[in-house]
Image (spheres, rainbow, N blue to C red):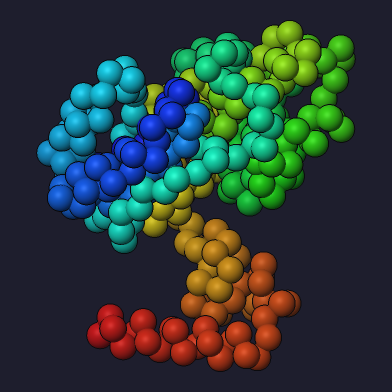
Length: 292
């Protein structure tokens, strides 16, 4: 059984460049796979490894007093969902593009999963999904607004055009693991919104803790590893990725005339040139050869 651990922390990390090599070396020695993002504003990561390796990693990370209180979320799978280990240096650990937004100084009110249903069924609360459009289509909370963004950088524009602090004073937001909402709630507060809430631990924590018969979640939750999506109890979902464009596909979408395994899907079929089709077929044949 492989442990998948997701974690982040916003913290002033001026020496983030110096931390890259030691973290990479440690993970490689423990055969841990995944990605760690480091920036001056903190750390953001999803990694996977054996139980012992993940325990050793957090002991190592917490030996730095700045990370002594870091929390992580766990799920489980039968094989490593990542092919390699990467430690990347970034300007932001989650890219909003608003330099004045600082989650270390102000964020919205955290709401734990067991109290989330009560909050979002309040008619005075506007519920907003902060994730990208393709993630929202796979699953979201009942009644949530979809900003239809293609990247998190577009979120401030959505707020500007659709939310008014005078007309919508109470806003609740959620994302996969909680990190986007650290910035989105901080941004709303900077724009004059008075009551801003976010789901503590994100969708993953909600799906882990809230029984399916009490849940207001509809569909599955997209995750950024080879599982593609998870369901209640964090069990592996039913989606796969298009080999051509990387879009998540349901079983019904794979029945489309525009779907061809390892080549294209309804989302990229119309843009598929003969040259690209030939390349995809070549890669498909090569993968089949290696698997055999």
